[in-house]
Amino acid sequence: MKITILPGDGIGPEVTNEAITVLTEVASAFAIDIETQEHLIGGIAIREKGSPFPEETRNACVASDAVFLGAVGTPEYDHLPPEQRPEAGLLQLRKALGGFANLRPSKAIPALIDSSPLRSEIFAGTDLLIVRELLGGLYFGEPRGFEEGRSAGYNTMRYSVEEVERVARVAFDSARGRSKKVTSVDKANVLETSQVWRETVTRVAGEYPDVQLEHLFVDACAMHLVTAPTQFDVILTENLFGDILSDEAAVLTGSLGMLASATIGSEIGLFEPVHGSAPQIAGQNLANPLGTIASAAMLLRYSAKNQAAALAIEDAIESVLEEGYRTADLASEGTEKLVSTSEMGRLVRERAVANAKGKIASHAA
Image (tube, rainbow, N blue to C red; front, side):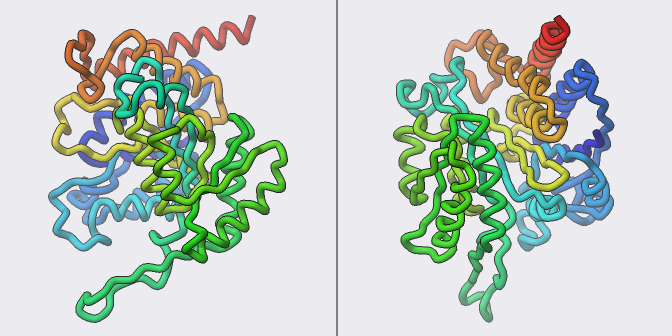
């Protein structure tokens, strides 16, 4: 596998280093041959190449089997027009790769149940996956722009039947491997795009008679995520709603540093943690690398097609947390096993490799 690594800005290089080390060693244990190369994106790319998404980075990404991203964003470029800021590189990357379905899992890990802002009896047992359409809707719709003198701004929300069909099938296929329920989220009582969305999802559901489908308005879904999150299995929604709901679901775990994501739908998967670049703690060895390491597990699951390798990493993350190890964002008063970015990476790596060897030995037996 050819993997292009984009460490990016802020804490991106730190957490990416830990994740790639775990990925490399677990892949080796499972005899998955990987070749990595590193390129620039975001603020560091502006600084060194004059563009948030340089042509050489683009060429490397589209020639890869998978792309692994750390984080994008730095306040020193906030004065630039939006199309020139570091974050523009991320949108250009997504468009270049063509992945249209963003997968964001949110799960209640027993060892962290008290870190959630929700009461334990509400959050315990939560295990959901948000499938967000990534290349349509308000973020990419045309026309868009400003009226003369910036007296008004306008954007276009648009979805075609084809765009909805393809992401809906990702959601239903995902549900088949989980608890067989899809909650489609829209605003069909107000928006024409949502009416097309609901009609199309309902029709696609007919191809999956073993999967239950329900529809929710986005405001109702936002409410249920914080009052009864265990009711959800797979949440399917469009770009803007998915952006908001997936961040809401992310903080339920207690820290954005815990959440991974995968963007699929094209031949090249994109894998990245949900958190931002956190420039205020960059370079201090404080950042939580677990969301990034979990993104490496998703790479093994979706691009390498190796479920056992992915589970070796995910089980290692839970084991380390169960043993009481915490990075600063997860620590509470009296935490005895407070560890740094690199220490957490080492702990997970050691357990993941041990898990991998155990799984291989068990399979051989």
